[in-house]
Amino acid sequence: MASKRKRKLEKKSSREFQEKMQARRETANDALWTYGLPLVVILVVGLGVYFAFFYDIGDPKAEKWKLEDPQTGIMFSSDDYYNDGLTFVEFFNTNCGHCQEQEPILNDVYEKYINEESADYSSSFNMFSIGGYKLGSGQDSATSISNFKTEYGSQWPHLYDPSGELMRDYGFSSYPSMVLIKNGEIVYSHSGKMTESQLSAQIDKYL
Image (cartoon, rainbow, N blue to C red; front, side, top):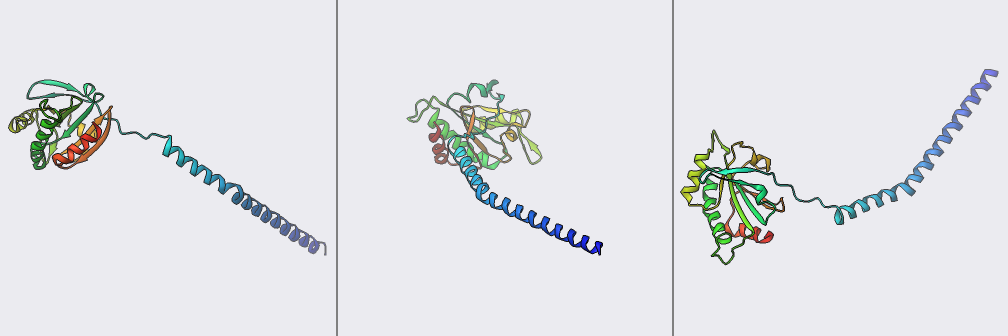
C-alpha cells in the first residue's frame, strides 16, 4: 500500500516538474520574441548603416616593383609613380595574339595622353607594360620584350619581370591584363583586349 502511494507521489511530482519546465520554456520563448527579435533587427540595421556610411572598404593596394626596361637599361620603380597621378600598367606576353593587337591601341593611348603636343596631354599620366611570363611552353625573356617594343615602335617603358610572379600578385592569369593605379591603390582592372575609346573612358574617369 505504501509502495503504491509512493509511486503516485513520484508521478505527481514528475508531472508538476514537467509543467514547471514547460512554463519556463514558454516564458523564455515569449521573452525572446518580445526582446530578442527587436534587438536582432536593431543590430542588422545598425551594421547596415555603419557599412553604408562609415566603413570604407577601399581599393586593393597595388603590389610594388622595381624593374628594368631591357631596351634602354633604365630601372623604374613603382614608388616613383603609384602615388603621383594615374598609372596604367599592362601585363603582356610577346607571343599573345591579343597583346600584339593591343600594342597599336596602346600606342594611340600614349600619343593621346603622354605626347606633349596632344590636346589631351596629361603630366599626371604614366604607363608601363610588364612582361616575362609564360605562355604555353614558352616564357618571355628580356630580349624578346626588347624586340617586341622595337618592332611596334612603342615609346613607353616595357619592363622585364625576372621573377615571373608580379602578374599573379595582381590577380591575373591571362593576357593582356591591365590596371589603373592611383594613390597606391588599384582603381580599375581588366583582362582582355580593349579599344582606344574604352581605355580612354577609364583613364578620363580617374585622371
